[in-house]
Length: 112
Image 1 (cartoon, rainbow, N blue to C red):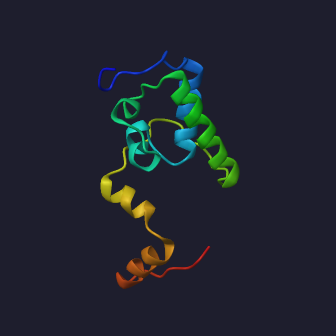
Image 2 (cartoon, helix red, strand yellow):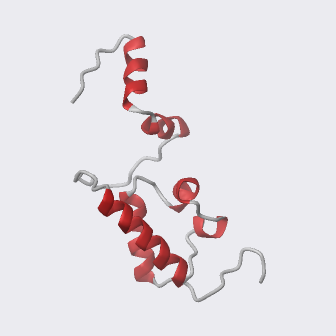
């Protein structure tokens, strides 16, 4: 087997659309953004999956979505701005740490 080459037929367009939807629902911008958290390899991070890999990842993401239903959000129209690394890190901070840092900077923080 050649390094980085798929070991089966490529994923269908329908599988790729479903994967893309699930990746976005999990809070990632794209496959590259999801590479570390989901354990994707370099080929998969570029959006290239075999049918078996796509089925496996779809099942895993659907199981995670059903275990942790996310609140419904309104999707904004138009292109979404790219988030910087610092914005992405801030999004991943626990609420208590983020609130403490904002208070340290003089903000008033109220729990929703």
